Image 1: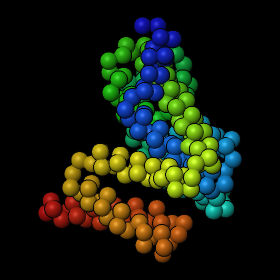
Image 2: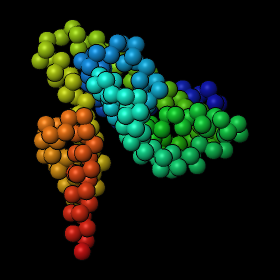
Image 3: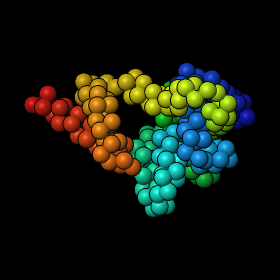
Image 4: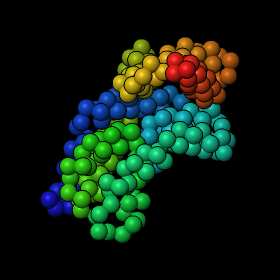
Length: 232
């Protein structure tokens, strides 16, 4: 398999089921970006520089609230901590390409949940010398779909009735919720999801601006304690 063919085969991840689910959530992000006052250009720039949807939402939300650059950078960094172990896991599959090391640094930019999962599923069956360009094709393909979905959600939010725009906006948190349910593996995982859903509304009322962070900390801590209690 040539490198060019591997790249284009990687872009077929654009049509995988996980990617299509991601695009549904991205429609909500596009509507959200319009709702908080971002221009279409700004809304499209965020997916290019921040591959992960949660980071895009957090940065757009902080920009709309007028938060400082330091606060926005800290919030985005907290959402991105999980990518360090993900990068460590996938890097062994991206070596053996025979090119310079900076090529590996380039494709690490595309480490996000959807591309990472598809990469772990597809890379073991690809020849070692083309795995890096194959993964690069996957990242570029998903980015293209992400940009298209962002623009569609942004433009649709201004062209449809208000109730439909609200429904479009709701696809984003709904996608996150369904993804967490799909990847849950234990009762503690499900308990964390339920705790987060129940605690999120009062957290939004009591601590606006910190509600997502507090909800995650409280829900995760309660679920951890629940898991420890069940194992004892």
